[in-house]
Amino acid sequence: MVTSSCAVLIFETADGKQIPVYEVRGGRITIKGKEYPIKLRDGLYIIRKLTVTECKRLQTVPDTYAFPVSDTQAYKMLGNGWTVDVIAHIMNHFTGLTEEPVEVLSMYDGMSCGHIALDKLGVDITVYYATEIDKYAIQTTQHNYPETVQLGDAFQVRDEAWRPRRAEEAE
Image 1 (cartoon, rainbow, N blue to C red):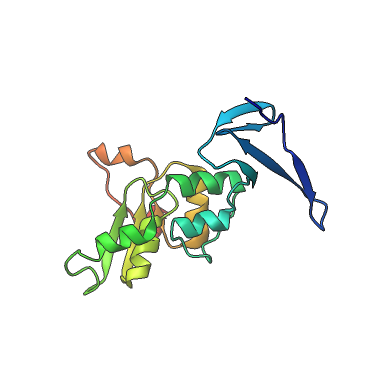
Image 2 (image 1 turned 135 degrees about the horizontal axis):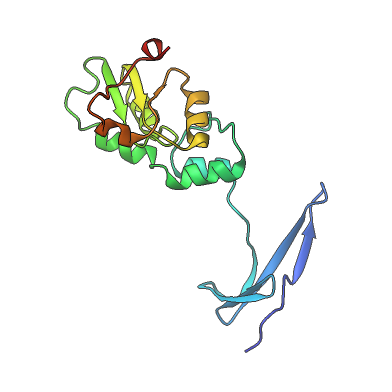
C-alpha cells in the first residue's frame, strides 16, 4: 500500500494563508503524519473546517444571529443546538400558537434556538424565561434577545418556593 506522509501540495493564498492539499490513495489519507481510512475516491482534496456562518446555515440560524463569543464556543453551541427550521415546523402544528401572545419557559435554553423558531413563526412573545447554566450560551442569548429573563439552573424548579420572576421582580 502506498500512502502519502503529509499534504502533497501547499497552496498559498494572496493573503499568505497556506492551504494543504491531501492525497487519497486506496481508501486512506494521511494527515499530520497519521493515516486514516476515508470513503473518497483516489485523488487530491482540500480539507477544511466549516466556518461559523456555514454552521449557522446548516442549523438554519439566521445570518444576523450574532455570537459575541469565540468561534470555539459558537461551534459548540451550534453543535448542541436545534435545527431551527425543524423546530419551527413542529411548533407550526401547535394549535393557537400564533393566535394570541404567549409566555415562554424554555428549559435548557442553550443559545435560544426555540426563540429563533418562534420568531420565524411570527409568535408574539410577551415574556421569554430561560433556564441555562452555560455562561457563553447565556451571553449569546442576551446579546440577541436582551429581554430574555435568565432563571439559572433548571433544577431550581424542583424547589417548593420556585416560580419564574420577571426581570423587574428580580431587582
